[in-house]
Length: 230
Image (cartoon, rainbow, N blue to C red; front, side):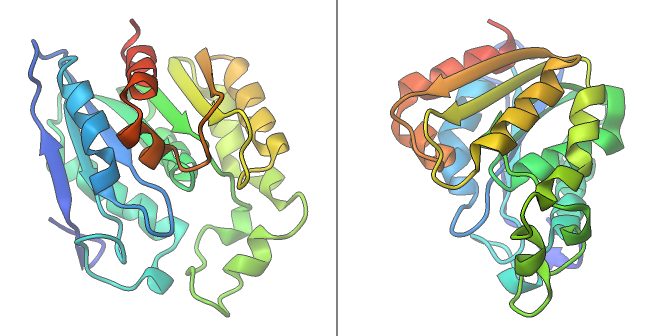
């Protein structure tokens, strides 16, 4: 698939149960993450009647581009390309994001509005407003901006989550060595204002829930059941 000037490697699953008219858009995190970690989750969602799609963001996996040229803004654009090209126009959207893609889910939620009927946030991160357009490469200001104490409080994601009024699932490890607890508390508090929130705490998991769900089908199943409302 072409999107945002890049060739994006994608994966897709058709429903293996009666279709429910919804597509799950599964978005991987930063660093070495890619869509391959998401395949088991996507299969499980397909078994509950969902289409499921995912892509490698540029600089990851099978996609073109350099990781240092990626940004939160470009992640949003690439995820939009995945949805606009890969999701039936009549389908509702189930947005699932890991770590950095918690911000991307919020950006997509603001863009697609009531078409989004469920969000799943897995150890989500928040980012200052000023970091959104900055490339990830050294010297761009991105790293300095995100390490500003309390800077995450300016994230537009929190306002988006406060305004959301449908199903939300927040899955977190009991102890996250990457995301500060006050970030998780802020996300939970924002979602609790209006959404139908399920808060899953995974006692043995680490921050990298994509890899955790890949290797721990019981916890993955708990998450999937919460997402589909069982």
